[in-house]
Amino acid sequence: MDWKEKVKQNLDTWAGSTSRMLVAVSGGADSVGLLHLLYKSLGYERSRIVVGHVNHGLRLSSADDALFVQCLSENLGVEFLFQEVDTQARARERKHSIEHAARLLRYKALADMAEERNCTWILTAHTLDDSAETVLMRMRTRAPWYEWTDIPVRRGNIIRPALHVTRSEIRNYLSEHNIEFREDDSNYDLRYTRNRLRNILNQVPQFWTPQRRIVLADNGSQILNATRCLHQISWVLPITTRSMCTNGGYGLAIDKIFHYFTKLPFVPIEAVWCRL
Image (cartoon, rainbow, N blue to C red):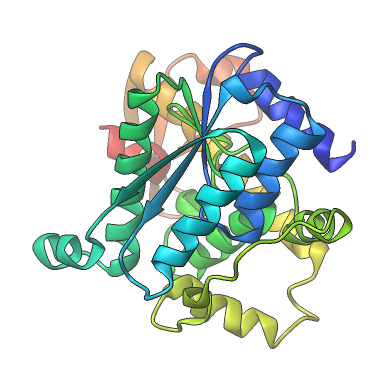
């Protein structure tokens, strides 16, 4: 399937054909590419699209980014909304990292803008590369296996329609159509965890191959689906603890589940422990 068709398929699956969508546009390649794709290539009506931009107040060039996105929206004939947030103050008050504070404030601002303009869905431009990086970051923290999950295509009213598209595919699209975008200089700031990981991966291209990214993202998706399934089962079926005599560990014996999964001797206890 062509990558543009993947984006359309995700949107058709979740957003339908009539609901309004707030598109989060930072001015970077991925979000600019998604916006152009929606309007120019996939032919979504302008009345269905609202552009939302959040200024985190972390860079001197933030005002230029906002002006760029505003001009882009006006050229495409779509509505533009803007919010400014104080990320550093939020990080100090809540004792959060800058990354975490920015993420929380960004999604809150986008939710406010979506509500203001009666947008049912919020679209972000996360790609397959972002998803694979997320899985690898979680693995590197030595988190338990059930936390090695990817970025979901949908969470609540947030949809990531380009999650099965690579970053290079979007860049090639922008290049082919001579579409301008802005490079975020904070992407090279090694104070941020994801940037440090990307810096390491750029030095080992023989490891960070396109195939490995696909495998990581796919495995993360499967783990996410499996743990969601186990969580749901743990709510509706009686659970008891079963001693695993062979290795001295413990598992969860869920009545009736073994009737459907005859090959499954037990459910790993950690996968649903947070629900008990």
